[in-house]
Length: 125
Image 1 (cartoon, rainbow, N blue to C red):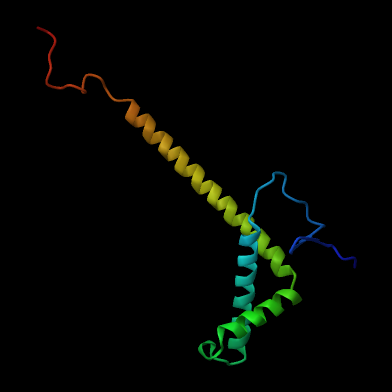
Image 2: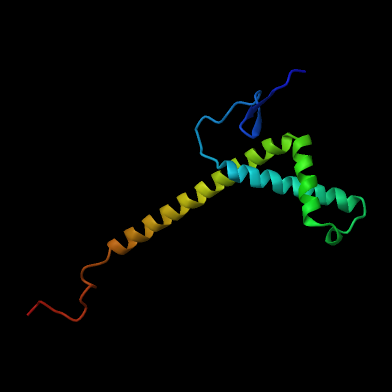
């Protein structure tokens, strides 16, 4: 089987899967954080399976093992990139809902009945 992963900076993507039609800026920092978090959780899961109490393991050791895990499992980067895209999409949808809600509230405020504006005045005469 041919190597289907292409390295783009620090991130490897599967070249067999088509890329999204539209470009979305995903922060490389976000991908790194998500990949490191996934690796850290996997290492912690392995330690628990070995019967080790996590409170007795130094954080530095967990981070070193997470770095090794990332080097040995490039699929974590792909999963982190996919998760970053999902988070970005959800954030975009949330912002769109907020924008629509603000627009709706502005329209409600601008459509105020004129005869209720000054209830105490009577121009009849």
